[in-house]
Length: 230
Image 1 (tube, rainbow, N blue to C red):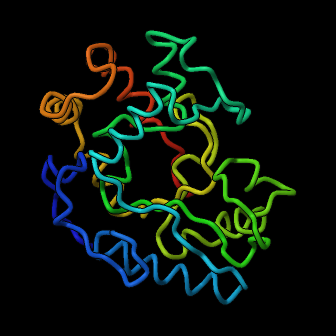
Image 2 (cartoon, rainbow, N blue to C red):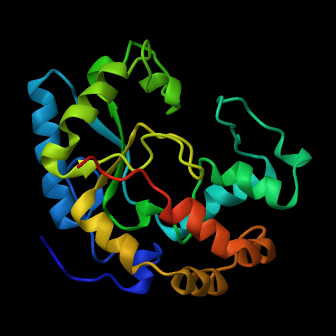
């Protein structure tokens, strides 16, 4: 396992020089990339075509998503996958609604090159439009088999589901895989001050309130995860 620490710029998505690009397009740290290829091979043996919908995401890209959700041009969903009218919310209520499914720029685990949002290409019916919502991974959903398979086998390649269930911060994301050895090291290395400095360098929507509430955001939406199974 690599023990090399990331820089503050890499931890916050402002530098991707620690990543490699796979032929299939994923940007990951080398060790996570090898583990991902191993997991895909394991899945293929069981008839699952594991595909990454998303891997690395830069600060800039996360800030675009954040801006779009703040101004209402991108849907904001509650835990029941119902669209909210974000224009009717303000202050902390607005931030909480957005943070349920979208990380604050600088805090996304996708900045690290250890995370993947996944689906089963083989399970997609013809013409199906992927939504990436929990109901697709629950019993009766198009990816229910994948979700059950990940629960049993993800750890065989070193992965776990940090948002397996809602724990008071980020909503359940049964599609989100994290390469545990490297992700754990990144989480320990990321600090509140590192995030604050990134935001001061690159201001985002709702900047003033975000900086005021940053300690709570960091605790609830960064540090609160579902621990890997023993």
